[in-house]
Image (tube, rainbow, N blue to C red; front, side, top):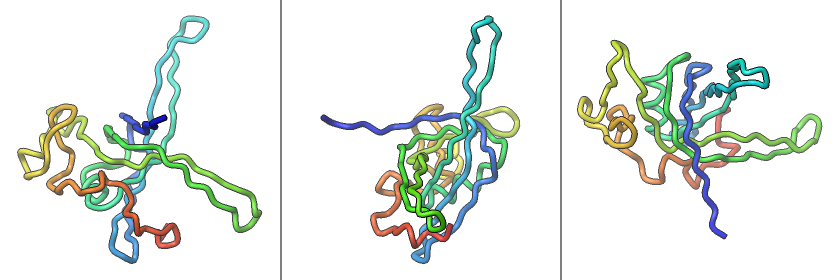
Length: 158
């Protein structure tokens, strides 16, 4: 049976994107995203519930995301789920973490209230929701923004 792993999220950044580099020079951009769900409870009152998701972008796409986004700003993210598993060095217990590896991002709005089309303004790619490519003038990388095959977990500086 075929598998399908696609995540589409829109929410607000919970912290400023952090960009670090591997020894090989690959950028790794990490940030948190709060995604709200609004629903009626059993009494008919509206409630809001936040889900906090860790997101990682690799390469130029991550550099561009960090350049144009900050804590509290809204972002539209497309990517896939990943599960990291490891043995805790102190306790020896197995640990795991589910997170999103971003493949693409879009601007959701800009200062002044008008959507900003980076494709027309800075030569980036365009397309997707709202017609904005979200690359901030950076060319789309091959491999869909996923970690390079040569990236080793020990190579990541954080």
